[in-house]
Length: 403
Ligand SMILES: Nc1ncnc2c1ncn2[C@@H]1O[C@H](COP(=O)(O)OP(=O)(O)OP(=O)(O)O)[C@@H](O)[C@H]1O
Ligand SMILES: [Mg+2]
Image 1 (cartoon, rainbow, N blue to C red):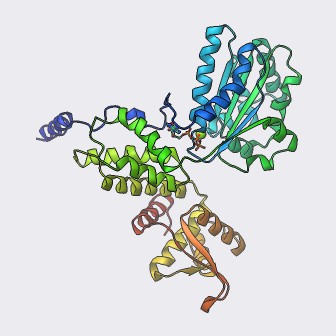
Image 2 (image 1 turned 135 degrees about the vertical axis):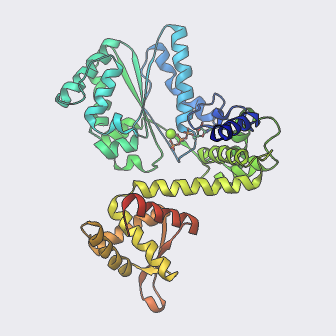
Image 3 (image 1 turned 120 degrees about the vertical axis):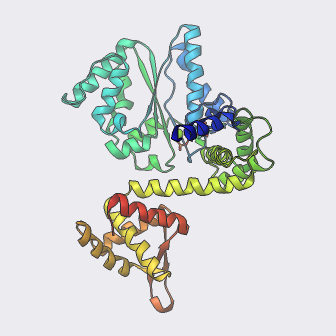
């Protein structure tokens, strides 16, 4: 009997026609060849890196712009073409792409340089050598290679946050030591103020050239989505207005193409799961909710326990009263929560900082009021829908044992 019903599930699934023709084209790992509305940026970067084809060192380049504006996609596409051209012309350019957000690659200076040395075929133990020695191995290997190296450090801000800018300083000086090879750096960041905090020498060296990627507007996002949707979905299953709706929603969120693509993919998945024949506006609404919920849960999970305890207190206070809460009240309940869950309570000042951070993350809303019966104080409440709030509460309770 059980076997039979399993059979039915699989058979029915096989019978169903998917709405997608090639869903992979809407995955964030897919690197499209065609990048509408980035011609200018593609041409600038290509002209800048072109000297490498004649064995000359391109200027260092700093690329910045908000999240989802196509920085990584453009760099990957241009450097891939450069690699091909180099092979064709016999002046091979070495291109190394590192995403500095990946923890195992770039959480210490040692690991990062070791990883680079390994990319040149040098053995480096994962710990134990003096860092200078690891640099030396990397520089030797680089010089033996007798080529131009273009080193792309994507999400470079998270690197500097973790390891400081010593590493960048050393890299920007390396050409003085190399005899046969030359190194060009391409740094990419979505933190627009990133270079402000750098050592001025590092800053001026990294930013020999700078390129800003501005946010896409709704019409541009529509073109981008359409170019990907046409091949990703079965013809005719995307209902009228769906692409436009995804584009408009993502345009409101600082023109983020990643969000637009996620919205369209999740809308398609939801339509498929509910056996709809077409993707419609209502699926986009549901997709938006689902994506936001996952994002909030992810952020909550990544918070330190202290911050989770503060959030737990806010949610509970708000549930009991359903009106905005004051910092002092949060602190009192938080101290109680600390007692029962074995945390060392922080001062009210620190708790106040954590409240500001949660506010910045968009999980709660905290606004200063200067009049009325409260005097000058901050009034706080959760900033997510009731449904998401309940899920956050369950998460904190079940996974982190609050309450
Ligand atoms: N012009 C475009 N045409 C087609 N797809 C695009 C375009 N711009 C961006 N995308 C797609 O949008 C998503 C986000 O782009 P990308 O990863 O390049 O953003 P980013 O600027 O590097 O963002 P972050 O700062 O968050 O790393 C990717 O899936 C990418 O393929
Ligand atoms: Mg990127």
